[in-house]
Image (cartoon, protein in one colour):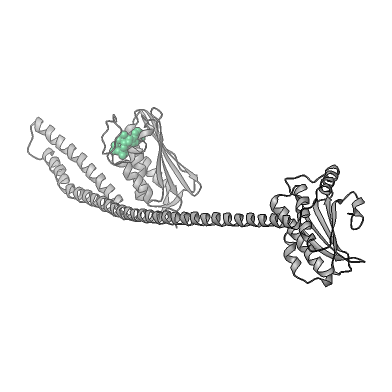
Length: 459
Ligand code: ADP
C-alpha cells in the first residue's frame, strides 16, 4: 500500500497507514483499521468508535458513488492543533457535486473537522480529530513503530468486525441504560430535595409569620405602656400642681399668723412661746419655698409654661443678677459677674432666663466655702455659652446626671434646699431652646454651662 498523493514522504503530517477500499466487504476492514489506528495513537474507546464510524460511513458513500477509493491516516504533530487526519480519495473522477447532500453533515459531528474538496483529478474527503489531552501526540519514532505494527497485523474478516461492532453496540446500549437509570435516580433525588425545600420554606414562612405576629403584639403593648407612662406622668404633674396650689394658702396663713403672734402689738408671749412661734414661722417658710418649687417644676413639666419671646440684652440680665445677689457674697466668697461682650442681645424670655441663672449662682454661693463664684458669657457658633464657675467642693462624675433628677441632693451637702432647683433649671433651658451641662471634679469646683441659641424661638 502506498500513499495516495506521495505525502508519505513528508515529515509533517506523517503517514501512519494507507489502504484501498475496493469492494463492500472492505468497509468492515477500513472500519477496523480506523479503530486500530485511533487506539494506537491514544484515543479512548468512545473516540475510537466515533472515528471508525465516520470513516466507514464516508467509505460506504464513496464506494456507492464512484467505486474504489484510497484511504490514508496521518499524524499531524506540529502546529497548534496536533490531530489524527484521515483522507479518502475516490479512484474515479467523482466530484463533490455527485454526492447526495445532507448525509455527511451528521457524520461530521463524529469528528472535529470534515471537509470535501475537488482537485484536478477527483474529489477528496478530509477529516481530523484532535489528539486527546491525556495522550501526548506521537513522535516520529513512535509513528514508525506504529506503522510497522499496523502493517504486520492482518486485518480480520468482515465477520470479526461485525462481532466487534455488535459488542460495541451492546456496550453502548448498556451505557445508555445506565445513564437512564442514573438520570431517573437523579430526578428522584431532585424531587425529594424539592419536597424538602418546600417543606422548609413552609416552616420558615410559618415561623416568620409567628415572629411577625409577636413583634406586632409587642409593639402594641409597648405603645400601650408608653401611653400609660405618659398618662401617669401627667397625673403626677397634675397632682403636684394641685397639692402645691392647695397647700400654698394654708402655709401662707400660718406664716401670717406667726408674724401676728410675734408682733409687739399682740399679747406678750413667754420666751419659750416666742421660740416656738419662730420655729413654726421658719418651718412654714421652708414649706412655702418647697411648695413654690414644686409648683414651678410641675408647670414646666406639664408644658404649660409658654416662653414670652422678646429681645433680651444679656448685659442687663447680668447687671440685675449682680445687684440682687451681691448681698449673698461673703468676705470668704466673692461674686464676680463679668460683662458679656457686645452686642449681647438674644431672642429669649427674660424672666425664665433670669430664673435659670439665679438658680445656678445661688447654688454656687450656697455650696462654695471660700474662693469665688464667677459668671461669664461668650459667643459660640449660632449662640451663647453662659458659664457659672465656682471654687466649691465639686461633684463626682457618677453624680453628674443624678443631680438633675428631682429631689436628688449629693450626700453630705447639708444645706437647706429641696433638690428641685437643677431639674427645674434644665427644663427651662430646654424651653428656651438651649441646654444645661455640668463639668466638675471633687475638690476642683464646678462649672454649669447654659448654651443658648441667638434666636431661641427659631425666628
Ligand atoms: P438644692 O440646691 O435645692 O439642693 P438643686 O437641684 O439645685 O437642689 O441641686 C441638687 C444638688 O446638687 C445639691 O443638693 C448639691 O448636692 C448639688 N449641687 C448643685 N450645685 C452645686 C454646686 N455649685 N457645687 C456643688 N454641688 C452642687
